[in-house]
Length: 221
Length: 392
Image (cartoon, rainbow over all chains, first blue to last red; front, side, top):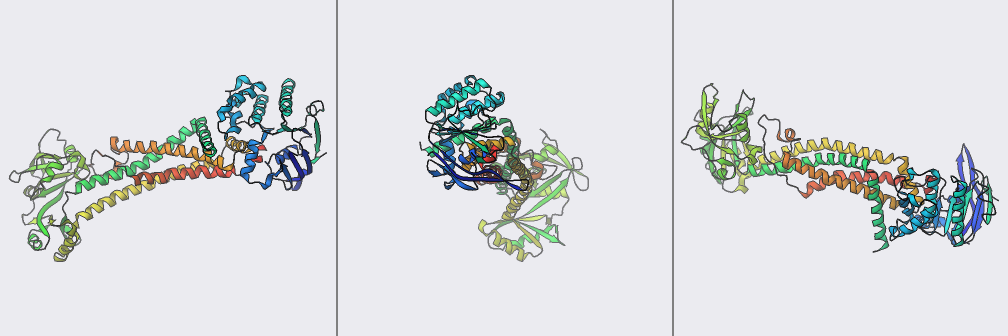
């Protein structure tokens, strides 16, 4: 297994009570899987994604990636994991506003030997998300949907094994959404593993994605 | 090239690019920071330059000066005291001197009048433009630049001043002190002892003080002590004491000024700290995004360190250069009143700042280091938060 979650529990204090955002989740994801986790807002999908990505420490339970337990590693190894093995697509605007579009895409390669040597690949990804002519624009000059597409291009730049995507098509129109899903499938066919969380039943339909899980009140069904 | 070195280069590249992206804010910070460092370095350089000028000029000061004290105040000293000193072993010569002040009611300035029985010939070469007064020629004087300006002599060589009985005494200028010695000679009018007595209407049996030359400069303090024992009613002042006094005066004035300026520097650092700790949501979000993308806390700190280092070193170089220009080309105009005193006959000397490594290090310690601390520590606090906090 590439990803193994065992008895994952994450709670948050809320209005004097303890809210179980992720409640004893067990999940196995194989290399090359395309997993869609479907749930309403507040169901704990984003928390589960950040637990898998090593962004949030669970109260209990474990996440193994490639057989290595996330939180048994030092912070440096965990940062390295995020940098090299995982591509993130976040729900919020995650571009640095003072960097141009192409600089944002190259950002995960800051520690590579030659970040600018990947400029051609960055431009290719930008073309693939339909923004080939906007490389030197600042994020502020793009719409919310266009920014989302730049973030998607960025998630692929370091050729990750895993893509963790939080509502990746949230701001996109139908045509662009199809383009993005086609891009996902293309990478998936090349062996990249996808974990996508969304409340969009259309996106999660079986015609488009091979494996769908439902999540409600922190519990994965 | 090793990956670690390459990583640092990439971080440096990111940090410098980040500075450029916020150029308006950073240029403002550099301007204000440079200004504070300019003021601080000006004080250091001015103090060094003044101390250097004082040391050069005081080489011609008497090795020992003996003044008679009555009721704690300086009185005229009888010439009979000269004989009492001549028997002390190690004394090369004793000369009476007139050292007094002439107050100009027109300009409100005090002119220091110096009447001597002999002149050090080395003065002519090193400190004068012109020649020394001749003892047979009544009324010949050497004037400091401040006196020349105060009397508005321009090209005139003759002028008259009032004696205490309001009769006029005429003088002829035979030389002026060189401008570079102005710190100590600006207000001096040098003449023969006879002219000094005549000008002040003093008795020929008295002088204002005695000047003692010693055979071995290393023995100055010992001989001064012996003089004090033989002439119990006198105050004995040595050249090292005068040099020390000047050094202390400049040091004190510089210290006073520096403390005032350090307050400004502290205010700036506090402002920088406050600014860095209250980072804008955009800056916090940027740190969060970097951490989400696999940057470590130390990488974020390295970016902040490079940014702070670049800003503070640039400000240091700019500030110190401005400080040098201020002293070398504008004669420390901002701090002249504080460092030179508030005399009417203020020196107008051309200073050449001497840059000592210790001065630069001192300025660096009081500017670059606090700025780095003020910017890196708040960034460390922001970068230490879990990366998922940026997702919420």
